[in-house]
Length: 328
Image 1 (tube, rainbow, N blue to C red):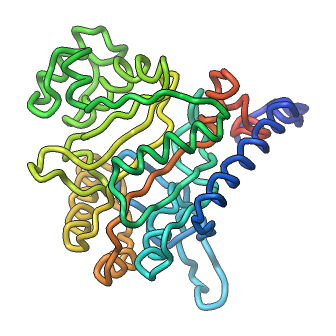
Image 2 (image 1 turned 180 degrees about the vertical axis):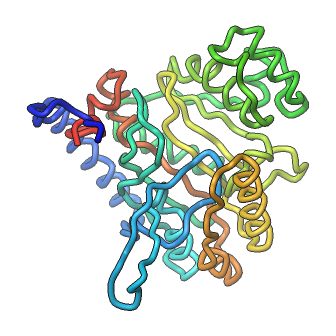
Image 3 (image 1 turned 45 degrees about the vertical axis):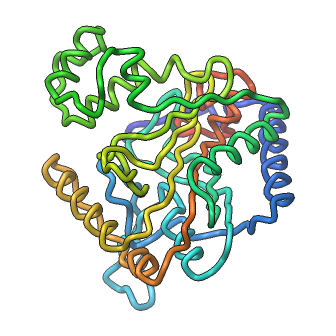
């Protein structure tokens, strides 16, 4: 068995000053939502289904007990989104929560398999209004007035790389990566969205949010995930927030159409199968909630650990966690 740490390395990996800063950050987040009249909720961390996004792999568990003598597979949630949308469809009104989320295979300076997520949903607003609230939340949490700028995904690629990400094919994107000496690009075999993600993460993201908050808008339709599409069908009503070169949040004007959502789940599972990944069980309860009627709404998930990193000027997520993956 591989050991994650030295046998005597039992101490926390961060200072108590940092833990106090985390506690203050969480308090300011709760104060913000209390003043906004949004209901704080808790939803399960483990479920019988999981999102189908090929970019996310689950951490799994298994329940054995009454009614399940042979066991029931469970998946630790990477986001509380599906449960929160079921609340919205049932008539909850605006909701928010702070919770733990989990992703398998992700560990590094900006990733821990277990992380803290802030997620909230606002009925009656679109992604533009939600970006304004995200700005207000971050400014309140940081206790500073941060300017915000907005730039479309396609514009960033044209400005920094000289290509149109909505038109470029796989070969064009690979050539761009090679021309910019992206490490390891020469040996990679990726689908079109894989090359887009590589170019975005290595060449564009580090430049974003250096003078304040940067919202990247209008992602390609192929990266819509759970967002509705723009009328032209080429882009999605999706944004991401960057600060200090780090992605902090991902938000959508949420898809309401149950049939379209079911088709997206099927397409993503087909992509998983083609890539040698295990297809994920589809959340039928979410589809039933969408069929019942999800209110027109926008939602966003924000990484709290990364927000604290930005606040304290730290460059490794281990520095803001009491016990990171390396100290289990």
